[in-house]
Picture (cartoon, rainbow, N blue to C red):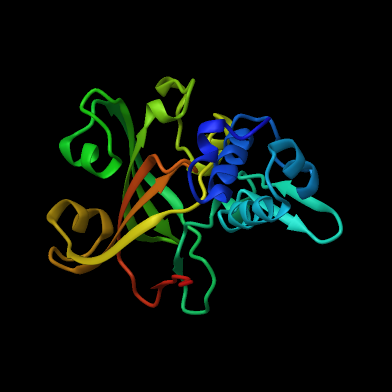
Length: 241
């Protein structure tokens, strides 16, 4: 393994090392929970300084692709673990605990993307997508209507016929792709008739709409999730760095 010569001409070098290591992880060269070589070994193998490798490792850890354990080394994070898989869920109860929801109505389809899906996911009209629509329930109360769109071609080998009610972190890891972060827009919206009926609220009720894009570790949008939530004592929690 080595940093490609053309990459050496670009700055900053640590990002090129980070991208290379990310691709190695995504390809399965290092499996979930396996240890990476130490920084000195990687620096020698890549032909860069230990400081460059250290900065790359810091970014990989910030992106939640690896975890560094004092005295033990650096390990690939298992994206299927419950804490990691649920890290994009930001709605909390009044006491700060995450809202745990069950699925009610569930619909799934696939096909060519709409113009809005093309725009949100940076894809062309011939890029196949898979969609799911869910009613999420808190106890016995309808809580959210969620619509999700997935770019099929960005998970190499994925067959739409194999999809069920997927978790994006588990699905991505299964097909050798890593997701590190998400970007999200939060706004208020008035409930249209169909959504109001599903959530058992009056039409025009003010709801919270969350539009989330989850890219691959290589910054290609993979999933767009749009949720319309009927919040009461719950709130949206965000960490700002």
